[in-house]
Image 1 (cartoon, rainbow, N blue to C red):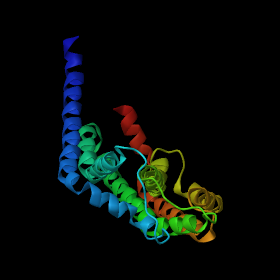
Image 2 (cartoon, rainbow, N blue to C red; image 1 turned 180 degrees about the vertical axis):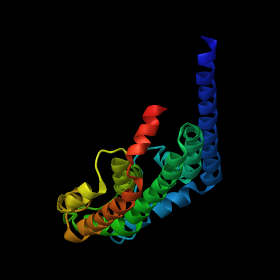
Image 3 (cartoon, rainbow, N blue to C red; image 1 turned 30 degrees about the vertical axis):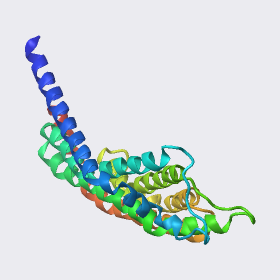
Image 4 (cartoon, rainbow, N blue to C red; image 1 turned 120 degrees about the vertical axis):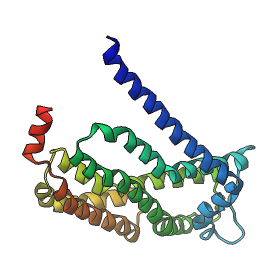
Length: 248
């Protein structure tokens, strides 16, 4: 009984080591950024501050909010900044159990997924935020002073960052669907008209109710779908690969 348990114990020990390294990387990045916590929050708040009417500003309604909110943002920024190293630790843990051809195919997916998430967050910050906050501030009823709480603002923009980051993972999702045999690039290409409708519906749900911002999200999502369909052709599982795995 002791022999079968040894590989499991060694895997658990290695998993703990990888997790500790990933956690240490996040902590180190956080410690390096914590001095600039207020500056980081100011950068995040800039798209809204530019749209606020003259004489208005953001507020903090909680006693500890001016301290805790920038700290929370800095910790989140540290996590996202350390994602490449975290993904490397994940890759180093799972790679020994993969076939050679699987390593060659999965490695680009692991690290391109981080780049696509960054691209989605950057798109939200530089394109969507100015349009959304410009729309919201102009729609305030007469006599209403806009004074957004800094904690509420952080929660709102983090939700948008996650939504756009996930939306930009469409190529990875498309490739994985084809690689696992759920569908094929040809079938996905045949569903293109439905995809166009879906991305515009998603754009409508994730953006303010104006055609410009909806289109600015829907068009990139459609282009990312097309990119995913193109690269999925290189990830279609061949019959002999299934036979090799069944034999193993």
